[in-house]
Every structure is written in C-alpha cells, then in structure tokens.
Length: 172
Image (tube, rainbow, N blue to C red; front, side, top):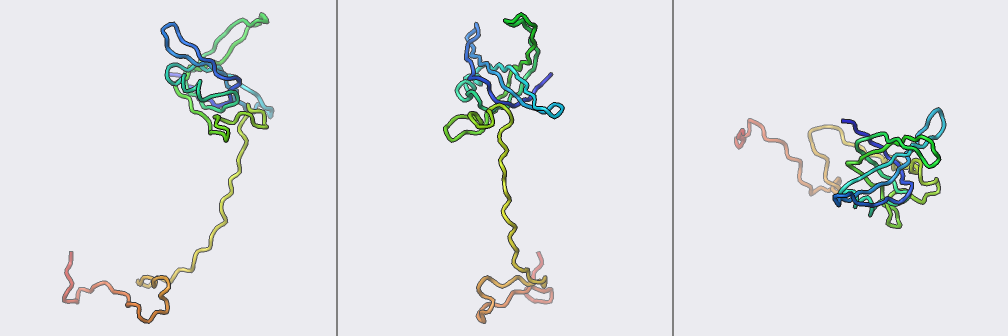
C-alpha cells in the first residue's frame, strides 16, 4: 500500500460537501515548501477527507492553518480552462493532524508575517545556565549529616550496620 505523509499550510478555507450516499466530504489544498537546487519551491497537494474527520477539518482548519496529512496518494490529470493539460498530486487522507493553536483561537500559523505558506517561523529555545552542584562528601560508608545539624552536638551518632558478631543479629 502506498502511503504519503506531507505537511503544509492551507491555501484557502476547506470546502465541505456530501457524497451521493450522504457521507460528509471535505476538500482543501495545502502548500508544502522545499528547497531544490538552492531555491525555494512550493508543492501544492489536493487533499480529500471523508466522514467525521471531514467535519473536524472543516471546523478546525482555515486559510493559512498548518496541518500534517497522511493518506493514499494519486495523480489526477485534467485539461484546464486554458486548454492545457495539468496533473495534480492528490491525497485521500486517512489522518490529519492540526497545527498549534494561536492566541486568537485559530489553528496553525496563518496570518504570519512570513507569508503563511512556507515553513513556520523557527522558535529559539535557550537552555538554562548550568547550576553548580554543592561539594559532595568523600565516600566513607556514612550518610551526610542532615541539613542544619552539622555542628549540633545533640545529633544522634550515625548507625552502623549490625555485625555477625552481634548477639541480636538475625540473617534474612
């Protein structure tokens, strides 16, 4: 089975319709940008979604929204209004993942200053500065003293494990 996974931004709002049998169908086109010989290229893909997922797509996706689509690819050929022969890449989607929510409540990266169709803006994440670890006591089979009791003369002495010479020693 052929499977295509592609991500991109919607060029227009999704279009809802119904099949002759009454099943819901949603169609939209996404643009996926890539580099070819150092230049940015756009690949437009027609997507069809059926059933309950179609309703979710129609309600959640808008022009400029980012989504990830996986499904069965096909090539569709047709003669355009200009009389030229065209071929489109089409995906019959079985799964659609929506992009992150914006502050205005819409999905995806739409209405961004970079144009809304290429890759989303790269966010920079900074790691916090490393923290210095407190000095560790040397290994001597004794636990470190509790916090705040380093100089307390009333602190209980550390307990040693029972020895086999001890009359109260019982092995497990």
